[in-house]
Length: 256
Image 1: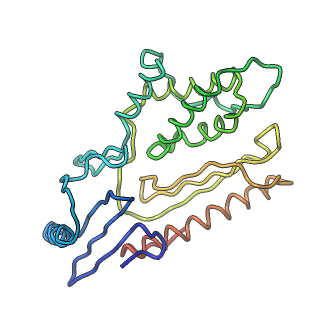
Image 2: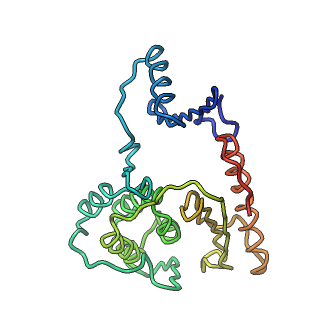
């Protein structure tokens, strides 16, 4: 059965067992309630399609998965190391945070510019890291606003993020299955150029972050209360989708 909430996910329930298949183009993941049901499902698929069984999940779409006694850790350690090496930052001094507290960037036409191609390449690579690094989401979202005409101050913030990665290259997300909890926030008129606020939300299953976002709001909020309402409405939409997806997977939740 195809999930209503996510069309790339399929669920099969048979006689007390459950199989979940996640499909992306020609790559797929199979998990289930028992080893026997998983092997049976793979055998059925191989009878219909030409497939290669790569064994237990360890690497998928550039993301690494490591089995530990605490659970599965989803991370991008190799990707991070390759990124630092590519842009000659592997010998840099590490930073303890991805950005300075209260960082505010703006576009200053009098400031010296930097190579936009290199800037876009670095920021684009950092955006892919946000798949497993929610701690980067806010700062990477800010530097992404200056892709067209980056300046020296923007590049310095990007390098600060890279220095933070140098000391946290093995960070990732420990997967778990507990209660769903979500949070939202907004900074009122955080962008000095267009006065728009940044809406942010994050959802956890237990202590595991599973969904996060940091984006500029589409309209200019006239008060901090309005900015918070806009952020809360975006978080509510995401919460409804997550609850629907978990329900399709057979995981009942009480969103709060």
